[in-house]
Amino acid sequence: MLGLTRKLKSLFKKTGSDRQHAKSRSFDINTFNRIFIDPYFNSCNLRCLYCPVGQGLKLRDMSKGMMSLDLFEQIWAKSFAHYRGTIALYNWGESFLNPDLPGMVRHIKEHSSACLLLNSSFSFSFDDRLTEILKYLESDTIIISCDGFSQETCEKYRVNVDFNLVMHNIELINRNKKPQTQLHWQYLTFPWNLEEVKAAEQYCKEKGIGFYPGKGGITSDFSMLPVPRTSDRERFRCEFIFHSLSINFDGEIYPCCAYYGPQRYSLGNASKNSVQEIFSGGKGKETLDYLMFQSNGNDGIFCKHCVERNVGVLESWK
Ligand code: SF4
Ligand code: SF4
Image (cartoon, rainbow, N blue to C red; front, top):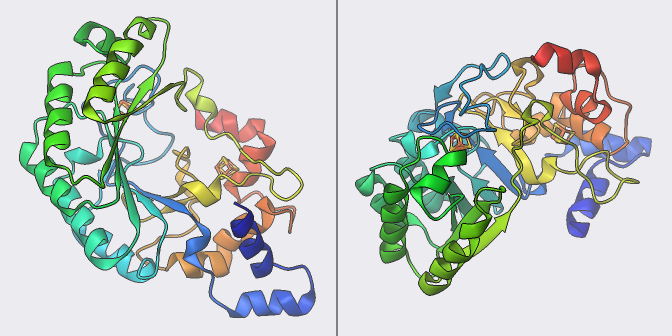
């Protein structure tokens, strides 16, 4: 993070000549060490208790939709040729339901050195889709989201989950993945699943799977998402944007993966302008300036509302 901080400070210095210089040169997309691209926003086969997608809520004013491979390739060509960070190919929905997911994975692996992060509940029967994706993955990471070690326990949170299918897919991944591809089991803990943590952990140990029990980001008060995060309050109002910049299924860019509307706070569209352009000027730059105490921001910047917890905006989300 320190390297990142220095890079950002050098892009947006306070003196007049430095400001001029920052304006005239292109922003480095590698400032963002992780970028989410959502292949299938607001659609899922599960109905998880605390997830607005699972609860079938209208996500503020955001439309639901699937990204096409064509749009994905346009976005990639505009911004990502030199990206070396991590692409998280999921966000607010079940990305494996998108039949173009293998094509997106192939495109990333053939056109960049970016690392891939995939995350799913793996409660689906897409053996061919999964096997094809595994062929392209190298030193990438797959996260299984599963919160129990039996159907009865798992479905208490992940409503509609088929635990046998999840286990079938885990075995399929473990059989077909390359040794350098990491497989992690993320186990959200609740009072009703604590007794099965040990069994899941033991299974992971036997299979060489990383096991990560803990509280998840989505809780019963999800209407308050997102929540600013920083490790350095002197320098940043929130630094989460550098780990979580988010591109929605339609190319709209939002400041972080926890954001799910309103749409009017989009920073720009990644199929029309490059990420570099959006953060060299316009709303992207305004947002970073605000988050780095270079300006007091304005009402068009969502992060300002998030940081200040503007009651009016929270009311309008409902
Ligand atoms: S699997 Fe993910 S997107 Fe689907 S309902 Fe559960 S938490 Fe939400
Ligand atoms: S919306 Fe902006 S301020 Fe809020 S958590 Fe995301 S990046 Fe931080």
